Amino acid sequence: MPNSAVYFVLCLMSTTWLIYALLLSWFVAAYEAENHLPRGTIRQAVIGQANNAWELLERGEISVDEFNRKFSDDCSEIVSLNLL
Image (cartoon, rainbow, N blue to C red):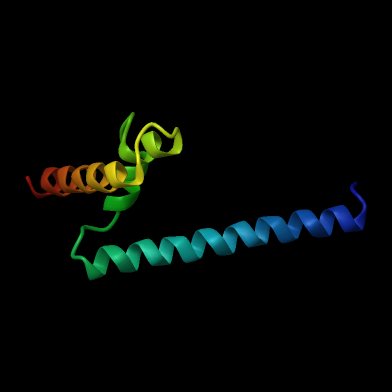
């Protein structure tokens, strides 16, 4: 069993990530609601398909301006597919 200091740090780190994930989830849900996007649109745009805007930005293959344009296109495509 790890010593108490290591265990405390590990618990603190996992708790911090959990709080971060919950806050981010709340922010994304609020943004989607405020902008009349179907729930889950942003999540689907981030993890939905290979070579999406998010992945390209993470790999440094596109600029922030290109990301904004492509991410908007990705979200628009998801919304239009959900409306069909």
